[in-house]
Amino acid sequence: MTTTHDTIRLTTAQAIIRWLSNQFIEIDGQEMRLCGGGFGIFGHGNVTCLGEALHGVQDELPLYRGQNEQSMGFAAAGYAKQWLRQRFMFCTASAGPGTSNLMTAAALAHANRLPMLLLCGDTFLTRLPDPVLQQMENFNDPTFGVNDGFKPVVRYWDRISHPAQVIQSLPAAIATMLDPADCGPAFLGLPQDVQGWTYDYPTAFFEKKVHRIRRITPDADEIADAVRALSGAKRPMIIAGGGVQYSRAVKELTAFAEAHQIPVVETIAGRANMLATHPLNIGPIGVTGSDSANAIAERADVIVAVGTRLQDFTTGSWTAFAQDAQFISINAARHDAGKHMSLPVVGDAKQSLTALTAALEYSGPASWVAEAQGERTKWDAYVAENIAHGNRPNSYAQAIGMVNALCDPRDRVIAAAGGLPAEVTANWRTLDIGTVDVEFGFSCMGYEIAGGWGARIAQAEQEPDQDTIIFLGDGSYMMLNSDIYSSVLSRKKLIILVLDNGGFAVINKLQNNTGNESFNNLLADCPTIPEPFSVDFEAHAASQGAIAETVSNPAELGEAFTRAKASDKTHVIVMKVDPYEGWTTEGHTWWEVGTPHITDSNRVRDAHVDWEASRSKQRKGV
Image: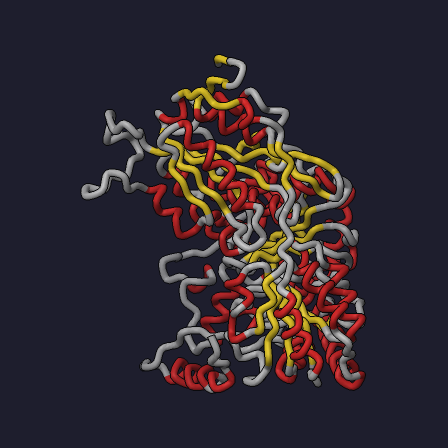
């Protein structure tokens, strides 16, 4: 390393890490590092140069050793969610399969609009040693490699081919990750030779920089259009999405709803925008929603969608609403604000709701609010019955209800793809704001434990006395469980509930609901498995250093959960649940699923006809 008055000679890798360690963000008047550190697995594509650079900044940018690159990316996503996209983690992986393992996690972050920095090894720029180990050769384009596959799943992509390029590329990557409208993962491909090349960088490049997340001011004319539409509403409704929390606009959402007496429903990502007990919280909407929210959605004439991309689980594949319902979409992203012929309000949720509250002289009809609240009362009664246990087969809902009754209001609850996201969305009663993470944006099984580990790292920086509680099935556990070990090694306690239903039971349910025979989902129905048996999840989790126990019913689960709360170590609780009985059967809207138009099975044919019968409700606006 050579320093002059105005420049400093560094390797490319050293420059990247030095610059990252000097980026800060102001959160609630407090400055802290923008990058909370990273997750890394070293290989020949990143250990010699990037590893050397990271070694010297262990206190500033702590590096957590991963067990699997995909799970590292999930952990980074969980960290970003917990910090409401205000801070991020980087992931570093070697060239070849180490990097390509991150692709699914990058897609998850892209779908959920989450910041994540990927620092990934790449082949040699000079090509002198080509072909090298783990290089994917393209015979007609030698510049094209595995790392190019990330282009569809990241918001910013670059391959550093000269050390000077980081001067432009790093700020551009950070600007993307902090942009409310364009937020998502950023990818930097780092050829192995370029990582070690040197350059005389201007010292000013490494000066401390304090970032602030931009708030996009809504256009006055768009606010006026929204006011005009709402002023004539007879049955207004608000859809509260995840963007409400990312904008830190929960108070403004509540104030807007209360000032104008408009019922609120929540998306999956927007769960925990309002407490379950708030009189205007009518419940979760959509395919995994509630009868209460879906009942008012069918009748609403003006719908204010705040911070949601209106994906199909929210909209019931666009069958959940009246054909002539008018949408007003408040969103920082122009792409999301204009969906389905919405009146767009392109802007920050906090500022937009504040402006709308001030400009609107309107109150929703008392009869409409009473109708919505009556639907919520009926839904609460259904949930109370659904989570009750006793003389019934064990179910997801019973486990959820037991934990809900015993957890601390500020504990964080995490679930992901499979049956549990729907069950948590429908049955969990929010005890405090921002305490629920249901990963259904990219619907990634395997996110739960890894994402929980990342969330716990962030939670330890914010609320160290609270717990991170993870619900997952046996299918997700088998896909990705190695961060039980990570959590124990790093002393980041998790409470993990493994609910074993003998396979992929929720997809088996969809298979049966569409008239198909059970096939290749439950272990018992796999023709290539002569003698099915269940994994000893207790022994497996214990072998990774966790405290583990198996319980036989929800009452025992409650006792074990109390012990887990009192512990300072990752605790895994295993309970078998019935794969057929106990599902939440109410609250679902129609969902478009491709079913066979011709078949030899009468059951499949009848199910197809029945499924298609609801298509007439589908809105055609795009």
